[in-house]
Length: 330
Image (cartoon, rainbow, N blue to C red; front, side, top):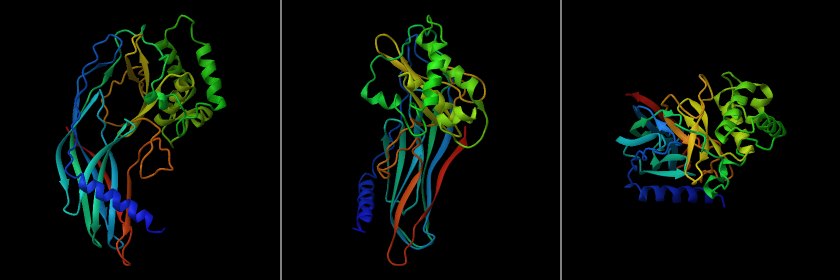
């Protein structure tokens, strides 16, 4: 029984090495949304971004090492393409996978690492991100009447997004009761956004859940975003977290009568911005309820970097890892 985890790791390593020839699929910018109700895009900002991992066998030789690190995400407002790879000889394979449509992970496999050795695998990316401008017209945008199966996660509870908490249910009712009956659905979501800004002051500090942010009346970008998402979901409005480099903000989903829909962002810190994102920030993940194969018992609001490995022989030890994520410039 004690050998089963090793076998599972070895199998994963073998699969990664077998797929080592797989290339990083360059993202394509999706077609511009031409409909009046859809988002519009500003001038792109282009950066070079390095991501990967550096692994060291400090306490003895190691084997069956697998490290996963999130890379910038391809989405309508962001194009990602690889420009160079830097892999040490010890690296057995590098592959890529997508999780729940909101995370792109780089998976690094190292079959063996000698005592005291350090190895690395890193890629340099060209990331082109466009700011999102508000739609030209909003009167025909509606809250979806039917939620597709792949969208249901965005109307249900997530880690730290407590849509059934009594304080959130009460605030949700209070918010929409104060909206004019003639208001369209865009204005209803706008009322939720305004209520969050009114109830929760922005302060830098520890991460808080939606209910904690409401209770304390203050939170950072994450707590404010989670409260907005919770209030939206309490009213069956799809909403989710967007994780960018050093920041987080929410986005919500509305559609036209024909069923075509779009995600619209909101700023959760700094200048008020509803249905738009004036700054082009490097997007890492979208979503807040991830399942990661290597961590099957956990629900993660963010698919964090991860490494697993085992000692090689009686003198072996656990490896250590420094994850790489840095902007190299424009």
